[in-house]
Length: 289
Ligand SMILES: Nc1ncnc2c1ncn2[C@@H]1O[C@H](COP(=O)(O)OP(=O)(O)OP(=O)(O)O)[C@@H](O)[C@H]1O
Figure: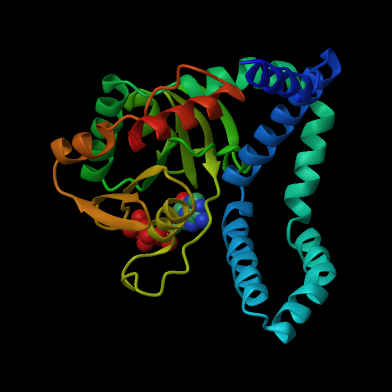
């Protein structure tokens, strides 16, 4: 018993004291890691991170198998890779630094991010998008409608003109009306609002796309390859409605089919900021159970 108590005592004295400044440090690091994860998720950095992880895995394997030449090469490539990353991500890094200088980080994390992520779209929005798409299809008005889901699209939004209007079929039809200032490019829908019009989307370089499809469809496919968004395309040539999601494009034959395809709302967020990550972990834990 005495020995047990002695062990307990030494265990408790071993635990370092957590001071207020430690807590403050933990908070700062949580916020920083959260911001970096958000940045990775919303930029090309995500793809590169995956590539980087493969190289690290390869390096560890080479080190374990004592493949000295390979580990030597990877060791000496480090500086080169760092320089290359700075050059490749120069636009993103500049934007990130500009944002850091211009925003109130605390407010953005706990308020703006919250209100932005929390919004899911309602059935009414789904109905309005569907109605507009098929109305435009009937009169062969080309349209490109990107519906944001979990991946934030601020970089795409920035290429267009801010709108911030509630989604109605009339608004959508009006935006894509020929020879009007907002008709060119794509619109972004976040929650129940059109946030931006005339946006430029990354074009897909998928070689297997039908040669009959032009840049509008290629742009829809492009955004669906790099984000989890849903993009409704109306062809100006044929009036056909298609939907791009997860890197593939499919033809939509009826309003009901489109409603069903876009009705799957992204899971509503109930927590925000860094605490969203905790929720994610909790969710994964539950899945594992
Ligand atoms: N990268 C892009 N981002 C956003 N919109 C784009 C992009 N590329 C093209 N578009 C839109 O697509 C229009 C051109 O469509 P184009 O005729 O080349 O494509 P398409 O796939 O054949 O479509 P459609 O069947 O409607 O003719 C442009 O006027 C523009 O509005």
